[in-house]
Length: 234
Ligand code: ATP
Figure (spheres, rainbow, N blue to C red):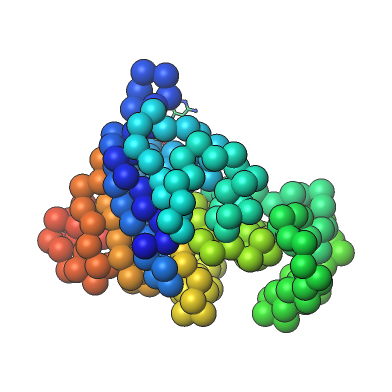
């Protein structure tokens, strides 16, 4: 396992947003965590990234206990998060956003990686010197994914990348996530869009008000009657 979350409890004041949850992310796999609004998905990602601290439980990454490790150290260890809501740095150019994603790197291949992303996403290349705030929603989503990848992570955390995008753009974003997984990247994908997430994932977990209520291969979850009824529109 690349990531193990064990019995994690996270509270906001007296309220438990995560109630002792456990899940695993296998190296090279795409794992998805699906659940409704307010179920605790973002809380989990923020805790893995070190932005929130659990009251109990632990997080093991690559064999090392990273519970309560500062966020910048977690990025250095190889975990990159794409936050919810496509948070580009709007007043910085596309090029500057990509460069910012490499802040932890000391090697001399940063420019090469930026050029590779520009080859893959010509729309970003054409507008490399424009402010990122001028991009469409879908383009901003591509940019935040590329920015996270600029850290050359071992694990990519994606928080609801499809949120607020037109259906055709949602499909493009899922295609890109699938392509990343096929290239060997390990991914934890948080989604409300259960059907599309499970279609591209290897493993899935379902979270309901702070508890994991199901965990299985994505193929099994797609076949499950209770999952179909609650999350896949019958
Ligand atoms: P969404 O899809 O809306 O992002 P989510 O599954 O990511 O939902 P979380 O954002 O993790 O859910 O929220 C889990 C619970 O914790 C919710 O009940 C939410 O109201 C509560 N919560 C989240 N952030 C805070 C906060 N800063 N202070 C207090 N309660 C919070």
